[in-house]
Each structure stands twice: as C-alpha cells, then as structure tokens.
Length: 280
Length: 359
Image (cartoon, rainbow over all chains, first blue to last red; front, side, top):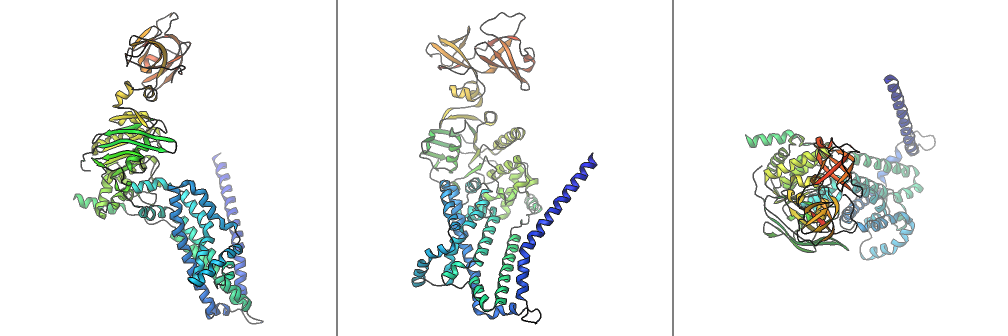
C-alpha cells in the first residue's frame, strides 16, 4: 500500500516537474525569440557581408543617442526617487491616520492608468510650455509627468507590501519605545516593505526607459524617441539600442532581486561573549 | 535585572469619544506603585482605550494622565517612559529577537555593548536567551509574546502596559505565560496595567481587578471581592456564572421558594426581584423518594470540569446551575431528582421584569 502511494506521489511530482519545465520553456521562448531575432537583425551584414557587430559599435558614435540614454537613465532615477519619497510615506500616513481616505487615494493613484498617454500630453503641454518659459526646459522636468505615469504601478506594489504587514501595530510598538516618525519610517516600515519598494522601483525604471509618447509629443529626446528616430536613419543601430535597453532592464531586475535577498544573521556567539566578558 | 520601584499612575476623569460613541466616560483610576491592575470588560467597554491613553497612543478629550506625579497627558507616546505588549504579534519582523529587545535601548542612545548586554539579560528573564538570534517567524506565538515582554521591560519603563497579550495564544500556553508575566512583574516590581476580556486571566494575576462597562468602572477591587461581592448586577453577570432566580424581597432578605437569603443591601424595598446567586452557592442533596417541592428538581445535564462539575437542574419554571465537587456530582446523574439548598450568603438583586432564568 505504502509502495503504491509512494509510486503515485513520484509520478505526480514528475508530472508537475514536466509541466513546470514546459511552462518555463514556453515563457522563455516567448520573451527570448523576439530578442534573439532583434539581435540577429542588428548583427546582419549588408548584402553578402558576413555577420558584424558594427551596429553595436556605432551606438557610441551618435552623440544624440548617448545623451538620450543618459537622460533616460537620469529620468528613471529621479522619477523613482521622487515617487518613493512622495508615495511611500503618504500611503503609510493615510493607513495610520486617515484610513477613510484610502479609497480616494487609490482612485487618484490609479487614474493615470485609465487616461491614455496622448490625452495626458494634451493636459501637460501648456504646463510644460509655461515651465519651459519660466523655469526650465530641461528634459529632466519630464520626471514630473513620469511620476504621475508610474503612480498606478507603484501604488499597487507598495499597497501589496503594506497589506502584508501590520503597519499600525509595528508603528505603535516602535513609537512606544521612543522612535520618532522618521525612525519609524526608515527603521521599521521600509525594511519590512523592501520587496514592494524594489518592485515599484523596478516598474518605474522599466516604464520610464520604455516611455515614448509623452517625450515625443512634448518634443523631448529620450531613449525611445531617439531609437525611433534612428530607426529611420540606421535600422541596425536602432535595433541594437532597443536590445541593449531590454537587456539593461533585465540586468536591473536581476540586481534588484539580489538586493531583496535576506541579510546575514548576527551572531549569538558575539552576544554571549559580551555577557561573559561583563560577568567575568 | 536590577530591582526597581514602581511609580504611581493616576487616570483622572478621562473622557474619550469616537463620534457619537463614548469610549471613556469620566474614568478615574489610581494604580499604586508596583501594583498590577487588570481592566476587565466586554468588547467596547473602553478598557483598551484607557490603556492607549496611558500609553499616549490616543489623545484624551478630557481628564489627565499622571505618572509618578507628572502630568503626561500632552506628551506623545515616544516621550513617555512606558513599555507595552500588544495583542497582535508586534515584533519587528526584520530584526532577530535580541535586536527587537534592544530597539528601545537604541532609541534611548544606549551604547552598543550595553544594549546587547541588557537585551540578553532581559531575554534571560523571560527564559529565551537561546532564541536571541531568531527572527519572529522562527518563534512560536508564546515565544513571540515573551520576546515582546522582554522588549517592553528592557527599557526599564515606569509603567508596563499589557494589551490582551495572551488572547492570540492557545489555552495551555496562555495559562503558563500568564503565570510567568505575574512572576516577572513581581520580580521587577513594575507598575502594570493589564487589559483583558478573559476573567480567569484577570482574577488569576491581578492585585486588583477593575470591571468596566460603557466607559466607566463598575467595580475596582481585589479579585476575591470582585468575584464574591460583586458591586453591581453587571459585575455579577460578567465575572463568573450567575443564576438568576425570582423571589420576593421582604425585611432585608429575599424569599426564594421558601428559602430566605440575606441581601447585600438590606435596605432594599420589598417586592418581586431576581436574586443573583453563584453556582457554587447551590448544593445538591438526594434522599431516596423525594416529594415534589419548590426547590426539588430534575438533573438535566452534568458537565465535568475536572475537580468540580457543573450540574444543571430543571425546577420546572426555571433552570439552576450548581457547581459541586465531581465526587458529589457523580451521585446525581442526569434524570435523577435532587433538592437544592441555597447557601445563605448575602446576594445582589435585580429589579427586572423579564430576566433570563440563568446566565
């Protein structure tokens, strides 16, 4: 009987393993085939010429492209930081002090999801026009618009993180032991929603690096605008940059996932040594 | 852990409302230095609000909180010297046990080595020094609450606040930890406010028990007094089991089916009333063929509780609970006839039109 049950479980495990492998392969192919095709296109020689990395080598020779890449990376960083600094404390505060406002906050944060980017541009254009004339016309001002754009994704991610911990009790516990609000936020809340913060950061970075509509319509040259422009002049370089940006996003994901790993444990032995020294 | 002397805590005419709901209605309570007072009451009676006001987690609409002679009513919680154990598991999940315990010390700018030493000392006090390097997720519920207790004690607070710290634990762990809390509280000598809805818990460990209802104290006194001399029908009802038996008041006593029981308040006016009688004040006898009588009934259920058993007797128009030694209860199986004898202890009465027979 036990042998039959053991055999059944082994067979079940094997089926599950096969299913997982098939799903992994299918998903992997779904993502990798287009990237491989793009890579193949970007290394294709002209006419009868052999395969070449010329398009990749040319990336650095387009000053506008380098500037666009730099601007997009700066935009991604600024957007992520501003979003986190604005959103995370606000969400914690609403959760603790004004829970009745939660649905309103959720509605406001999710609103950009329902408004097409082109419609956002119509609303943002006069503001950017005014900012350009009176404040600055730097491409980095796009980060204001991007913060709005990433709100729904960041909100969802942070909300999931905050829902997974008892924010009220942890905050009250920390406060009762003498912690101020900044300490509560930095020492108690943030470490416990680290995954959510990293996820929202990644989503923001990915979104900003892939954004085209707003930048193009407000006449700013970010990475995607430059790729589209290059596509008309040199398709090989354009595709090479597109592949590079995808790989870059993938690398960020991997790096962030490493940040998310558990930290090392502090050693009890050290503590006991301290005690022995004190007593001795 | 060094010896400490507790401080006096006074809650003076505290008021707190949440919209139309009155959570605290002129609550006044003085806790003597080193005393453990348990606030007991049903959900919504205001006991947790009182504790939160003392902790500084809520603001009072009126009244004062005085700790060691100082008015701390306006102080935020992080500037009051209180240690608190919460109902929900409240250990910081990203810190190991000793880091949790050391957190309050770190906030008080205690040096690293001293912090570690005191954290481990306090963990020793709760018997968890071996678990110092474990995260909350690696500890059982009881262990987590013991670490939380150590965390609260490590800062050497003036007042220890326990907000139903045992309610999430299973019965056996609850009983053990309850005794442990009392042992540690006595050892440390800290003034403690313990909030619970579990009467057994409150009666078992408190120096004094305060029974609350509707935002005010119904009775405050030693556990024995609260149990055996309830000040109000609510206290009699809420603390322990109570039989409600109809009778007639006359001359400082109540006549219940021919038995005359003295009243707590002998000046009560004559007339019909309901007597509140504890099950242990009812004894059972049976002697062969028993004729029908006002206090003769039929046993309809016997509940085994260990050393004692609870016998439910049907008197025809009402049922009465009797708590007797299990050996005595075994002589009265379900279906047998018994005669009830009511111990002539002074009883409380209630003027009720239609009181339930038993609660």
